[in-house]
Image 1 (cartoon, rainbow, N blue to C red):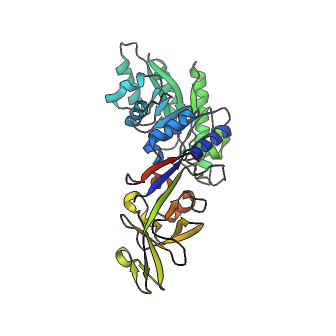
Image 2: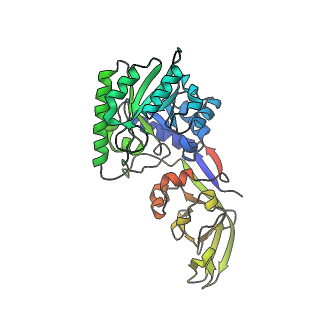
Image 3: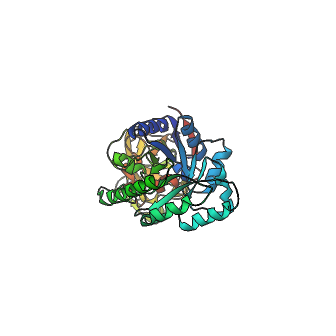
Length: 362
């Protein structure tokens, strides 16, 4: 028996519709990198395309290739670094590369030199993330440089919030102020209509003034409200595992590696088929987070590679029953991840290949 990640596509559609209505006239670019945050790249992308999402965002060119080979036709923005080895990929109108540096502009110029080809691009500015993107103070010079290169089809400009998931919005507001100056400059210098986007999930949920005419929605699409504002989002993934064994143990007995749990009384222990090899965090030890029939059961002893022990004392549970590790009403992942040294993103993207993805519409 294998653990199951139950993926509720109805919840995905509802989350998309909620975000789409919340952002008004702005367009949604759904972030599906890292196997759609562990939910399944192809299945999630196909569902979103059928339900009207404007486009998708990926981190690596291989993800773009996979989506095209699966029949996806909507725009796909490659957020990552431009690779000279596959630069021709972006001649296709709906395959969009990111210009992250002045070097990227020169790479594109060299590729286009003497040809009638067109490269479809968005330009990224670093407004404070300190990662990819051209320094926002170089906005005017950068846009003028691109304007003078025949064949670069600039369709959008964007940036990325560094701390939009924090309660203090001071730096987020500073980044938005910088980005608004970029938008003003681009509108002045460019004759073509551009897409502007800076909001990730936390940004779009916290500040409607940051929506511009496009947003990049990631974790919120999967039903996780990391800003704690009670938005109408429902978990898309429910991680479940089967109970494969129960044992009665005596007071003083230990459970698991390094004897991290010693029974204070006689008790009933259940063993579920999931462990850290499946992406279930070691840090869940001693947390009451495993859901069964509206009861939250405690993880006892160290989470091992394949098996996790739970306290089933006084609970009517039997071998073959299934428990929910996260994604239920009482154990939403955003409410329990703080009990570990991991965040929501690392837990979702760390769900292993042994975990069966099961797609439902209900």
